[in-house]
Length: 361
Ligand code: C5J
Image (spheres, rainbow, N blue to C red):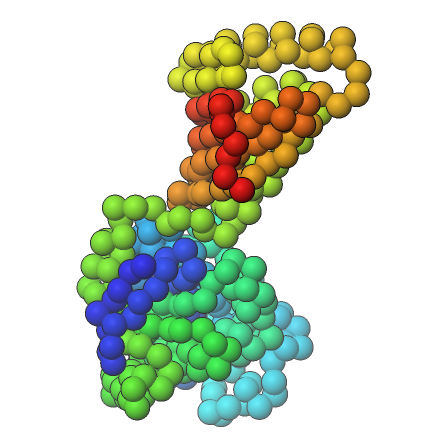
C-alpha cells in the first residue's frame, strides 16, 4: 500500500490495482493552430504540464502502475460528432475544419496526436474518446476491469472540462480517484482552482487532490519493492506454470527443456540430481526423454497443493507448489524462479525435492 498526502485526507492505494490516467495531452490542446486555439485560448499555457506529467509517468511505471492515455477526437466522417458539439460556441473554425495541424480534433490528424514528449509506450493503452469524459463511448471501463484497476491517479487537460468530467464518471462507477493539482491545467486559472476545490469539498465528494511532489514521494516509498501480482503478468505466469506442469505430467521433455533459460547461469536441483547451466539441463532432459520413449501411458500423474504464483513487477516471478505423486504416494515440493525475456517466460532457477512427511492439508 502507498499513501499519498492528499486533500481532504490521505489517499491510500495499491499500485498494482491503480492506473495513471493522462487526459488529452494532445497537440490540438497544447499547440498553436489546434482546437484549443480555435476556441480563443492560448494553448501554450498548458505546455508547462508536460514536465510534471513526464515525471509522474516515469514514477508510475517504476512502481508497476498501469499508464493509460486518452485523446479527444472524432472519426474522419464526423459520424460520432454530435451536431450540438460541432456548433457549440459558434467557432470560426469548428471540429473537422482544416487547420495547420490538419482537421481540428479529428483522429489521424497531426493535431490529434499526443505531444511527442508524452508519446505513449507500446504497453500504454490509448483511449480515443468522442466526448469530454473518458468513459463515454469508449472501452476504458472494460480495460480497467480486466486489469483489476480500482483506483486512478488523474492528470492532463483541462481541469474543469475533460479531467473533471472523467473524474465524475469514474467516481460514479466506483473508482477512487486522486487528481494531481499541478499535473492538470486549464486555459483559465480560476476555473482550475475552482474545479479542484469542488473535488475536495464536502469530505471529498468526487475524490482527492494531491500535488505532484506528494504523488512522487509516495511512489518513491514504494520503490523498495516492485508491484506484486500485477494482473497481466500474474495471469501470464500462472498460465505458463500450468503449461509446464502439463508437459511434466505428459513426459514431454522437449517442451520442458524449452521452458528453461539456455544460459550457463541457470541452476536446477532435481530429485536425485542437479544441473548447472542450460547445457546440462538440456542433456538431462534429453536422457529423460529417451527413457520416456520406452514407457507407455501416463508418465507421472501427480496432484498439486498449496500452489502459489507470485509476480514482481512485469517480468519476474516465482512458482511454488507442493505435490503428491500418484504412483508412490510420495509428497514433495517444487519451486521455480521465472524471468520474462524477449517476451517469453523462462525458468532461471528450480528446485524439486521429496518430503519425508505428509504436507499439511
Ligand atoms: C476541452 C478537454 N476542453 N480535453 N477538452 O474541450 O478538456
